[in-house]
Amino acid sequence: QQQVKQSPQSLIVQKGGISIINCAYENTAFDYFPWYQQFPGKGPALLIAIRPDVSEKKEGRFTISFNKSAKQFSLHIMDSQPGDSATYFCAAKETSGSRLTFGEGTQLTVNP
Amino acid sequence: NAGVTQTPKFQVLKTGQSMTLQCAQDMNHEYMSWYRQDPGMGLRLIHYSVGAGITDQGEVPNGYNVSRSTTEDFPLRLLSAAPSQTSVYFCASSYSPWTVGATNEKLFFGSGTQLSVL
Image (cartoon, rainbow over all chains, first blue to last red):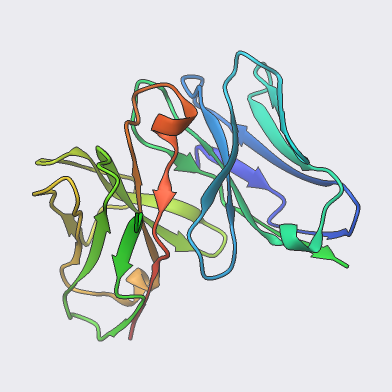
């Protein structure tokens, strides 16, 4: 049973466009929601993270939007660039726990 | 700092063989974990450790063993390899998963081991 569900599985965007990846979770005890970015042949790396006390967090071109009542959160990549082409994973964790649960991943391709 | 080091990078096994995937970190991290990555299934937690001498099962522990005799090392053992264990394996560590704060909770991943079981 996937506790964190991610969509879409793949996404193709033109350079300069907005990439949007969505995640939904079931466990209401989750209170830490990071996004990881993975380039081919590499391990994932932390991109940006949010806690439920805010509805949005922005770092450069990357924004997380969080909807606690809907138990959903999303990653927006503004002005998408070919260098953003990678696999993106959402994840969730309880502060009282140590386990990070990942979504299925989204393969993003940004065409020049 | 080398970060999280995994060896080997590639491995081919025959069904029934056993092997150990090595993982070492030099950041004095309390928490270490093993994930497997399969297409369409994301990263699934196999086993994890919150400190030397302490290990616990994740989502998909069957067929794997771990131990944590030192803070630095967290090897993953495949007891009797099966084709279903063909996957990319990642070791990851963090300073302290229970302490709130981006630095403490950030997972550092190794570069992965691509394992094929024939």
